[in-house]
Length: 160
Ligand code: HEC
Image 1: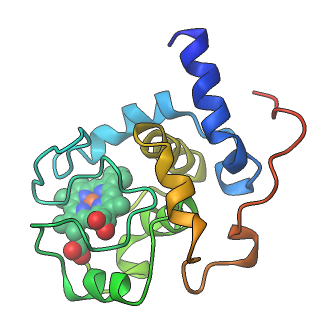
Image 2: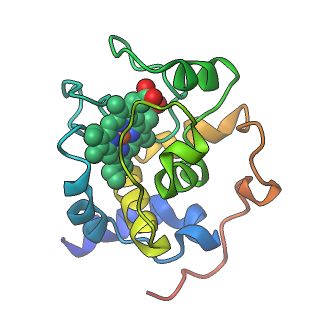
């Protein structure tokens, strides 16, 4: 990745890197891990949904709302109740999809390693960096931990 692109990416990710769960999340590694998801998910803009919905702009998207995809009741209900895919909520979901969303149609065991989840979430953010701001501007996800609120950007860039 070029230095400029990487710098831009870092700037977009900076507010989130201050959060423990995503500290050091590497979008490049995340892209590799995302191979595990590709059987069921596309990530290109306007990509078709496969067994699972397209994830291009999933960060900041209201849960269970991609048009044309037949979600499970639990996913639809989460969205109706105002749940949004913030990086924190994605982390929680990817750790154990069935535990966070009992009855989900996503038959995936989960990513047990926190670093791998942080990488995948960083990758998803990198696809559509605006989503982080959009998803957290108005309504916070219900039940989100208080520290999930975006904090002021740190003065110094975190060490790599
Ligand atoms: C075996 C197929 C399959 C695999 C593998 C899979 N998913 Fe899914 N995913 C689904 C399905 C099906 C849904 C819809 C779930 C529902 O309606 O309950 C979903 C839903 C999601 C959602 C919610 C999207 C929305 O619009 O609300 C996210 C985020 C997600 N998956 C991320 C991932 C990531 C990241 C991976 C890889 C680590 C992954 N998935 C692997 C099938 C899969």
